[in-house]
Image (cartoon, rainbow, N blue to C red; front, side, top):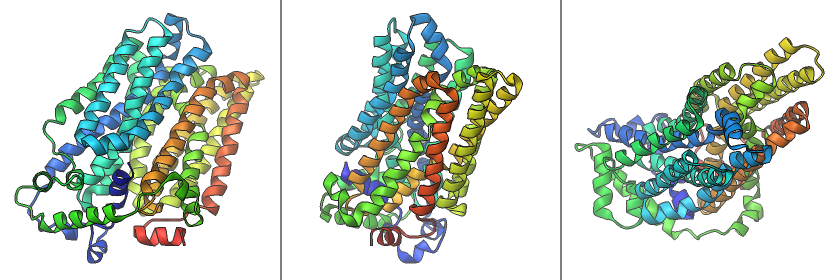
Length: 475
């Protein structure tokens, strides 16, 4: 897994000559190569069907909670397990996806993960008890967690320099789109039918994989030189001169193979401690700020606040996609740290507004004001999260770890992220039963701590080479 993540995370800089880095969009490298990136676009579209599937899995529980609970007679604990076991499966998927994708290739890995998702949806569709629901949710979670790794790896490995940033952001946009569509469709279709719609992106992905090439970098890594050159030529266009890029990739693969493989214990050496603190710390604040509890149960939050869950969920879903898209266009202009700070401040404001709404409702002070504050708070929260804390921690993580520890450090950060997602999604309903107001005050406090962490610990990485970033952090 370490070798795979080294390739994925480091390719942005070493594959470019210093003279080409001066071009912000990388056009100096490709403008005269005679090729057209239509195959890159097609390959990216096929791959991000896995990202859409990720979103469909994550967004399923929110619009279906009432219907599933009523039909199958589930308790709060049983539905909380159903909602949260998805992230437990995702933890397993995230950990195992690297070795699997490294062994059988990116395309076959996506086929395997699609099979897990399809099996999961069918188990949910035919469920007559909580056991079948949980098995299906666990299987879908495994596929979701694995997709969270292999999709951005594949896109990063096939994209030319001038398109890599834009295409990589499609991963996050499609995740949000999948969540949003699940929210909206779940309002009008039964929960079993909604499960069947989750099979559609897998079908598109499985069909599309027959028409796109394998990752050239993976082929180079396993020594399949002829297939590597054919795949790269197909991606760059039949008239493109791939000689220079092919040599760069081969040289870089050889360099990676010479690097010593790191272990988990190496991360706690003094020279790596700051980068590990930054990467893991951002993942902790991203998840423990409450996002998965709110995402999974947003319909019930609106209902508890006295606001129409259907209208609130639709607004929430659309806003999430729009703001995520805007944030993706700003990350290389505004910078990582400003987006994180604005996002964290917005999260605090959203949590406080929602907490006030539930306080007013609990004390029967003003039902109308409580409803307005609740929907405002939730929409402020999701807008703020989508603008920065949703995507930026993953970007920063990809930039700060030295090449020889990136694989194991990335695995640690991903594991922490999914553990946090599981913990929040499992405890959310219990916290809301304890105190709705107190739940959001707690999340506000965690997001306030995130502001301090970002100001004091997180560096700005915009416009700097990976070597400059890593040298400064790990000096």
